[in-house]
Image 1: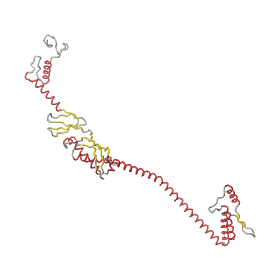
Image 2 (image 1 turned 90 degrees about the horizontal axis):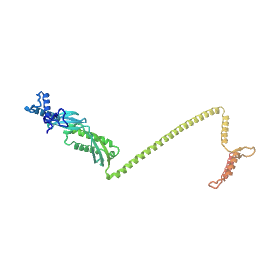
Image 3 (image 1 turned 90 degrees about the vertical axis):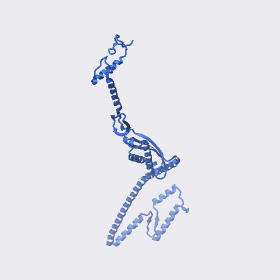
Length: 376
């Protein structure tokens, strides 16, 4: 027997039944009655005709169509995106991030992420300005800055940026020498290539923004790598020797300049001393001249005695003048004692002719005696 037969006392809205499902027909009728009440229609009782005039069914269909149309026309653009609205395939407008609506089946949406950075790798061999070949490896980072131009200006944006990068890098490398590219010019080449790529893409209205070109590696082909390594080592040795020479020059030059300055100062001091001595001698001569003019004989005698005194003071010999006899020459006693001590300590060395120093001294004394007697 069915659960909803009369007389069983199982009201689906009263909750008196135990584990009994509700009456679906009754639910539909209640929903129709409520919708009629909302939209101004007459409410039907439990025994009313649910399909009279077809009004409620059309209303439900209309509500369903309205809900479906709203669901089909609403769309949302995320924060890093922009929406390009196409009406019958032609550009109509650009939608910023947020909730928007469109005409279903007439307008379509193309979402373009304008914040995402994309990367593609690049590697190839190129010819430099000095007719050398270098191997270039790097990557290009870019984003879609203008969605409308990105979608409609070029047929294949990825192929376009790859060809533009190829052309720009070849142009920059072809304007520089291999030595510049392989050593000190990597950052400059990357900046110039980025600028040239952006200018070319802007001229095509691609809507692509090149954020950076990274030059990962620049090296000669493998066939000549050994020769290039030798040249690089020679260049490094040249720089090292140059630095060593500069360090040596920085050490020697200050000392040489100091020595030159010291010699100049000594020369200046010597010049001043010589001038002062000359001035003193001139003053003394002038003073002697005055005295000589006053007493020529006395002054001449005094000058002679002073000169003889200076000569004898520098001599190591003693002259004794005895009356009635010749001049006798004696060596000083202290010199004789000193010579005897030297002879006792070591043998007297012979000179090249085989004559001893004592014999030479004796000959020297004999010659001095003869010279003194001849002067007398």
